[in-house]
Each structure stands twice: as C-alpha cells, then as structure tokens.
Length: 607
Image (cartoon, rainbow, N blue to C red; front, side):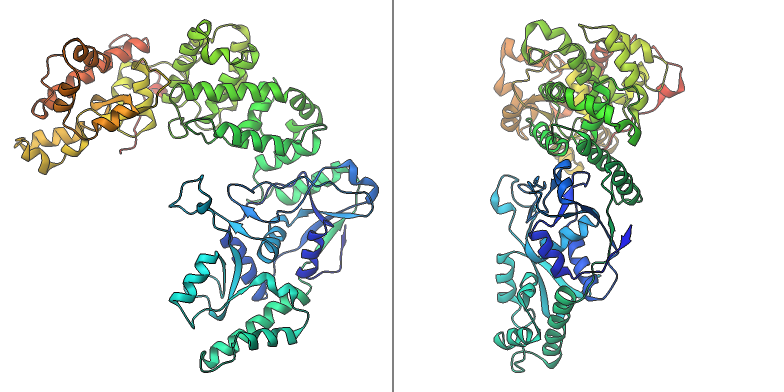
C-alpha cells in the first residue's frame, strides 16, 4: 500500500463531483451531524490534522465487478439520508473511499451541498420542519462560548435574515462554498471591497483585520494547501479490500458492528442491493401504524434466525458468502414474515413506546415463516387461537423481560420448539421449557402483586391492562385514570373534604397505579377528559349499560364512585384485577416460585 502525494480539498471536491471518487458498497451511510461538520472546518482553519484517508484504486476494467454509490449531494433528514447507487462507465479508473467517507462527505456538503435537519416544533410530515441550511463563516469575529475558534454555522435563509435584522455590524456571513470560485488573492480583496468590510465607519479595526485574515486563510486551506493525505490500495481482490476495510473501521466507535455486517452483506449479495433493500424495509415497517422503531440490527439478526443458520451471533464469519447467498435467496420470505409480525403486534395495540423489547418480534416472525402464514394470521377466524396465543406469549415475554440483555441463546431453542409444533403457536411448550430459569414465562402471585404497582404511562401498564381487556383492535386505546389525576393533590383533596393527611397520602400513593387505570377508546378518553368520574359515568351510562360498563372495566358494582370512597374503590378493583390476572396467567393463588431469579421485583418508572 503506497502513500500518495496529497491533494487540496478543492481537488477532492472536484473529484467527487466528477464521480472519480466514489463509495464502495461496503461503506456505511453518512451519520455526521452539523456540529461535527462545523468542528471539522474549524480544525482545518486552525491547522489541526484531520487524519489520513484510505483510497482503493479500482481499474477501469474492474468497475463493473463491484457495486458503488455516489456521495450525497445534499442531506435531508427525512427525504435524503441514503446514498444512491452510481452507474459508471468503464472508461477510466476510479477511487473508492475505504476510510474517510464521513470527513469527505462533510467537506462536500459544507462546500457544495446543504444540510436539512428537523426543527422540534414542527410535524415530521411538514416541509417547513426541514429548512435547507448551507455552511457559513462569520468574517467579523471568532466564535463565542463554544469549542470552535472560527464561527462556522449551518444557517437557513430565515436565520440569515434574522441575523441582519437583530445584529447589524456584528456578523457578516460568508457562504463557505463560494470560496471555490476564488482563483487568487485579488478575488479576496475584491470581495472585501464589494462588501465594505474595510469601511472603518461601519466596522472596527479588529473586525476588518479579522475579515481579511479569515477569508485569506479559508482560501488557502480549501483551495491551495494539500491537506488530503491518503494511502492508496491497488488490490483487485475484494476479500483483501474487505479485510482492510474491517481492520480500519471496526475499532472504537468508528463503525457499528451492524453497519459493518450490512456492508459485508451488500458486497456479497449478487442480484439485490442489500443496503438499499434493508434500509427501505426498515422505513416501511416503522411506518406501520401507529409507528415503530425497528432498526437494521434487528433485521440482520432476523435474517440469520429465520434462515435457520446455525450460529446467529453477530460475527463476520457468520456473514460468509454461503450464508449471504442463502439470505438473499430467502429475503422475500423473511421480509414478508417480519412485516406481518409487526402488523400483528400493532393490531394488539403496541407501538414504538409500548413494545419494550424489539427482539421479541423475531420468534413471531419465525413462526409465521415456518408455517408459511400470510395476511390470514391478521384477519382470519381460523387463526384466532394463534393470535390469542401469540399475544399472551408476547405480553408474558415483555413483562418478564426475557429478551433483555443478549438473547442469542434463546433463538435456537425457540426455533426448535416452533419447528416441532407446526400449526399452532407453542405457548404451553415454551412456558414448560423455561420454567424455573431466568428466562421463565411463568408468573407467581408475588410477581403479580408487584406488577399491580406499575405506574401510569409505563409500557408495562398497557401490557397488563391488555391482558384483561377484550380489545377491539380496530380502535386506538389510551391508558386513562378512572378517577382523574387532577384531583390528586393535597389542595384539591382538602377542597373535596378529605381532611386527614394520612388518608390523603394513601390517595396520592394509589391513584397512579393499575387499580385506577383503564383502557378506553381514544375518542371516549377525549370526551371524558378530567370530568369527575362519578359525574361522567352516571351521565353517560344508565341501567344495563352502566352495569356492562362497570363489568368491562372491573369497576366495583356497589361503590358510589365518589372521591370520598376512592380508597375502597381502588382496593376492590385492584383485587379484582389480581384475580383476573391470576386466571389469565394460569397462576394458582398463593403459588410462589422458589427460584430466586423469579422473585425479582419489577420496578416501573413513574409518570
């Protein structure tokens, strides 16, 4: 591997534009944020080293053997995060970037492109949420109150206008990309004169000197100085290049292991573009209503599990050409099973917040694929029992946190049990297999008592309630305080006549947990709002409808539902829910599991 003559940043930008510099399929995608880019440009102007680069020379005759991507011409957090494949002619040699893609892309975006990230106050679907920002440098002063010496910032057109209105004379923002058009120092003096930056009636002596020095330095460091130092690998053997890439990118936090493995898969798939397909698939399943946060790690792990590859650990050896070929040929079935699994979980009422262990998707997808199930699992009456069994297993697994940590040891056993019990989801067999272990799906009375202390807003509160509610999943359901939380403050309780402080403390310790929580339809919850429960329920339900409502929500029939009798209401409903959970989870009252791993107290976050 040879150390080559360095080049200027301007030359590197030109090579990217001409697609002389390209990205190999094994490269991960761009991940730097605007602060990192600004810091890079500040380092350049401060004459700090920006590390060496590693290029791979791909001969013209070998171009068609490999898959390459173009650099991002601009970055948009919603619409333009993924690099596009590039179609190259075989008329000249190219240079693929093995190490330094983040830095080169940052230079390219800062000089020749733009960066649009989401503003917090806007909806994700709104185009106004993503103003286009270009990189600017303040020519009048150093950065204030930051780790930067030079004031580089990505600014939108609206922000530029506000600076001119609110800070006249304090900022002069120079668009960094314009420096490429300067051919020599006279262009700098011309710019300074045209913008009156030497006018001492407008600017101080320090400001005019700083403007001249800073613009001159930017010109030198971007256009003239040869700052891009790089090694050049000339091998035509992909295996060698791959191992070099692994060696330079797997250390520290430069590259996540899943990024690396996806890169390897991308390089080894023959007919499909693994990176493009998997990224688009992740976006697709995360868009399933009401929204999820599946990542590529889970999809890659699913590929190993669902194709029955023996060793499913994230190791380079498991991403061999043989395994990648198997995954590529089976991808459509893998994607179908994962898609249906996420749709099914969504139909149970789970979302990105309440699905607390995404790895639990994988056994469900394996069951779907192994039984060659399609959309009928979601809707058909013939699959009703499977839906019930899968939902109970999922809730058990999530409540017992069996997928916490690294669950790789679970998958082979789950695969064997599912394969040996085709047709029906093997809930009973899975419960029996792990009984008495730290991956147990079984419950005891003590654990249920602790679960009943789960607080409002917790994902586990939704899970517990979903076990006892016969939900119609055509509707969205909310966790709701039966007796509204607005009344559970000392001042409010005193106004309601609860004079004893100890009794008020009991109110405050109880209202936010399962005994005072229910699942109701979204529209009904909005109507109920913070109306006193006694007023709301008696004005909306009469006679038999009232009795049915109370039974459906496990509300004591003989309680008058006033705030004065809240503690009696709470205790009675808590006991009713406990009996129901004991029944649903097949726990005999007073049953205690002696294995110490089963006695872990489940502590949930408060609201």
